[in-house]
Length: 211
Ligand code: GAR
Image: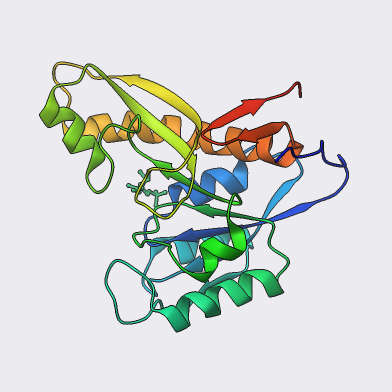
């Protein structure tokens, strides 16, 4: 599939799905996303800090039930989330600390239009506690990855990555902090490039034509 360069004036509506703190959501709202606009935040956690951040930024924010499971959506609930995204005219879905796997209707409807940010250089250290996994393993370089979401965990085609050196005296907190700074830069950059239509998607390789 080749995406055409997009009309520079047309606004592309983006939804962020998040479960917690919301620093990537905030960075996307404040970053240069080109003609992409963060126009909706949905959370599966009605106590998430990201709800307060959305209200401070004037972005429509909703809590929606994810269903009765802990790490995935119930079938009905995933359909409800998907329906809402479609009703709101959402073009791109950005997962930002959503602690839940997407497998059903959302993936079908938005395949190739769901991005995730992960705090390691994938395919190393997928899943939970990626920064601790990297420290425990003893790697000297780690970082973050923006990738498309597919049916497995952290396995989709890689859009871009930023590297971070591990220091001898790093703790999970200090390393996570430096990775997070790169996450904020990487996510806006990936979204801006997506919205400008420069990506050529050929299977696992996301190539970039001239901006
Ligand atoms: C970020 O570090 C993100 O990479 C990570 O959760 C954090 C959310 O922070 N996501 C994952 O580990 C997904 N596997 P934020 O709520 O401040 O954006």
